[in-house]
Structures are given as structure tokens and as C-alpha cells.
Amino acid sequence: MRPEWELMPLEGVGPLRFGMRLAEVVAALPDLTALRRFQADPASRETLGVEFASGPAEPAVRANFVDGRLFCVAADAARGPQVTLWGRRLTGCVPADLERFLGHAHICEVVDVSYGPRGNPGVDGLGLVVRLQEVAERVVTRPVVVGRARADRCTATGKARSRSANGWDACGLRRVDRHPGPRPATRRTGVNDNLSSDQGRSPMAAGP
Image 1 (cartoon, rainbow, N blue to C red):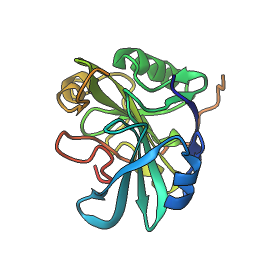
Image 2 (image 1 turned 30 degrees about the horizontal axis):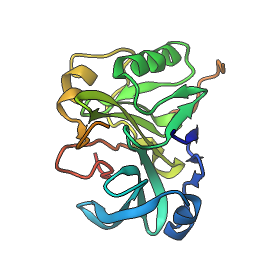
Image 3 (image 1 turned 90 degrees about the vertical axis):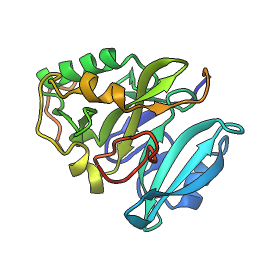
Image 4 (image 1 turned 135 degrees about the horizontal axis):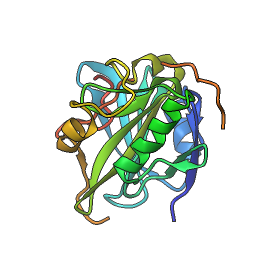
């Protein structure tokens, strides 16, 4: 059973609020333990990444801090919380299904969907990037969310109304995070953190 975390665009997700200090995040996640810490951005020693786990070697949530303040949260596709947006789950989904959901919201001008340089779809106005993770020999979705201060960099490329030749299928499936085992509004939101994942690099890297 996964906890359900509602995405509050640009403000936080579940019990976490952007701007929290590490001690506050730890207190807000009593059922998780800090598994490891790492330098999340190779170009910035001030950017700290912390991986929270539900058990030994069972990562569930990754959080990034800059200047001691939380600015980014990612849910593990296999063991992380079920992040929801408008009642729609974002964690561990079939990529094409979630892309259709975002595409429909784009057509209805509820959000403005764009694609990052590695083909990951995102919505700058929600502080959301959808990335891919391999779990039990299949690829599912892994949401990464950021706060208002960095939301203008969710996706660094031009806007796209549908999957393009260099879109999700072309790039995303070649660059996925690997898991070791089985495991109605009609108003357009304000648009505008580019957080993409490469194997061999922290999945919470602060840069593009």
C-alpha cells in the first residue's frame, strides 16, 4: 500500500513544502529513513540530494536542497508514494497513458505541455516533469516536481502539442532510471525546472 500524495503545483507535494529545511523534511516523513546523501548537481556543491527509503535498499523518495532549502522531490516508480494530480495518478503509470492525459489537458488549454531535451514531457506551470524508470523489465512513469523558484526551467525546449520525432519514444526509452529488482478547470495555468535523468548520473540532478 502506497501513501497518496497530492501535488500542489509549485507549492509542494504530500506532506512536503518547497522551502523546507532537511530537518523539517525528515520530520514530515516519519515512515521513511534517510538512506544516503549525495551531491545532486556535479556543478554545484551547494546542491544536496537525500534519498529516503521505506527499508534497506528500498528507495522511495529523493529530495534536492539548495542553500539548505527543499526545491525538488521525485517519487520512485516502484516504491514511492502515489503522486496524484486532479485525481489522476502520476507514479508507476504506462507512459503512453499519462502522455495522453497531459496531451488532452494541453488541447483543452488547461496546461501547456512541452518536451525537454531528452524527450521528457513536462508542464512548467505545474512544476512537473514526467520521467521514466525501468521496473521489473518494464518502463513506467516517475514524477519529478519542483517549486516556484525553478519552475521556469522544467522543460528547456519549445512547446509541442504532440509527440515529435525527438519526443518521448525517441529519447526517453533510451534513458531510463533502472530499478534493481521486481518491484475541470478550463482556465490555462500560468506556464513556466529542467530535471532529466541519465543512467550513471543522479536521477535528481539539478541541471538539464
